Amino acid sequence: MTHNTLKMAQFDLALVKPYLRTILFSVVPILILLFIGNGSLMYGMMFSMSFAGIAVSYPFTISEKNKMERLYAVLPISKKEMVFGRYLYAVIIGLLMLGVSLLAGFFTFMCMNIEIFFTEIFIAVIFGVNMLECYILFLLPAYYQFGTIKGRFCVFFPMILSFAIWGLASANIISIELYSLIVLFGIIMMIPSAIISVRILQKKDI
Amino acid sequence: MTNYLEVMHLSKNYPNFQLHDISFTLPEGYIMGLIGENGSGKTTVIKLILNMIHRENGKINILGKDNISEESAVKPYIGVVFDSNCFCEEWTILQTMKRISSFYETWNKEKFLSLMNRFQLDTKKKIKALSKGMQMKLMLAWALSYDAKVLILDEPTSGLDPVSRDELLTILAEYIEDGKHSVLFSTHITSDLERAADYITYLHYGELFFTGSKEELLSMFCMVKGGREELQPEQQKKLIGVRTFSTGFEALIKTTDRACFSGMAIEPVTLEDIMIFISRKGE
Figure (cartoon, each protein chain N blue to C red):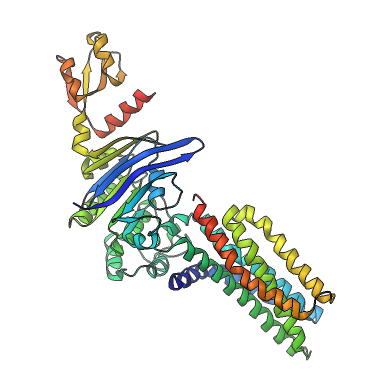
C-alpha cells in the first residue's frame, strides 16, 4: 500500500505543479513585505499557511474539472491508497509552505539585522503545523463528502479553530507545552480523519 | 472456456431509475456488445464493474476475482475507453503516460510508443489539443500498453467519423486474435457490433432483455412487410412494434410466428431493427 500511496502523492504533486510555481512566485514577495512590516514570523506564517489551505484543494478542483474520477477508477490502486496519497500530498504541500515562510523570514530578518529567537521560531512552527493539521483534519473529509465547491465553505472552521488555539496560547491561558501537545494530538488525529475520508469515498457514487 | 467477466444478479436503485437483476458472462477471447436505448443502464453497469458506484445486490467477478474485495488485484487487468477524455487536459501525452505508467508493473513503454506511432499521435501534444478520435486512441493505447485482459469500451465511437470507427474495430479484432483478451463494447452504433461482436447483452429500461450470442438474438426475430389491408387481427397481436406507411407496414415478429404471416415478405433483421421495434413496443 505504501508504494501506491507515494505514487498517488506524486501524481497529485504533478497535477498542481504548474499552479505551485505561480503560488510561490506570488507568495514570497508578499511574505517579505509582511515580515518587513511586522518584524515578526507569525503574520507571514499565517499568510503562507492560508495559501497551503488553498493548495490542499487543488487536486480536488483539477480532478473535478477534468472528470478524472474515471481515471482513478481504472488505475490499479485502492480507494484507501488514493485517500492516503492525498493526505500525504497535503502534508508535503503544507510543510513546503511552512519551509518557504521560514526561509523568507530568516532571509528578510537577516537583511534587516533583526535577531530571531528560538521561542519565536518554535511558536511560529507550532502555529503553522496546527493550522495545516486543522485544514487536513476537517477540509479533506469535507472535500470528499461535498466536493470542492461546497467543501470550500468548511474552510472557515479549521481557520477559526487554529486561530482560537493560538489565541489561548498567546494569552497564556494554555501553556506552550499544552499547545505543543494539542498540535501533536492533531497529527495523530490525521489517521482517523483519513479513515473517515476513505469511508466517504467507498460509500460515494462517483 | 473461462469467463473473464461474470455479472450476477446485479441491481442498483436510483430515485428515477432501477437496474434490476442483470446477469451475463463474457467468455475469454470474445467481444460482447452492450446495447440498449439511452438510459437503459449500460453506463450504470460499466460503473458497477469499475466499482465507481454502489450496487444494491449482485456480484461481479473479473478473471474469477471479486471486483470490490479484490479490487487492487483485478484493476491491472482491466482497460477502459470512455466516451470522453479522462486525463488532465493541461498535460502532454508523454507527461500523462509517464505519471500513469508508474502504477502498472506490466507497462510496456515500447508498445506504447509504437502505438503512438501507429495512431499518428504526437506525444508532445497537450491532451486538450487532441480531437475526440485522438483521445479515444490514446485511451486505447493506455489499455493496450499494460496488456489489459478485459477491455471495456463505454460508447467510444459516438461522435467518431466512419474511418476512425473502422480503425477501432480493426484494432479490437487484432486485440482478441490470440484468444486471451475480451471486450465489453457499449455502443449505440449497432452496425459496429454487427461487424465485431460475438455476444450481445441487451438492456431495456434497466432490465435484461437478452444475453447470448449475436446470431441467437438475430435468429429470434424477423421483419414482416406488407400492405395495411393484408394484416388480420390475429396477426396484429403477434407484432412487436410496427412502423406504418401510407402504402403499408413493417413490423418485428418472433421467428417462431413467421408461419402466421405466409404470403407476406419476411426479411432478416439487424440489431438496430430489434432495438427500434422493441423500444416501440415499450411505448
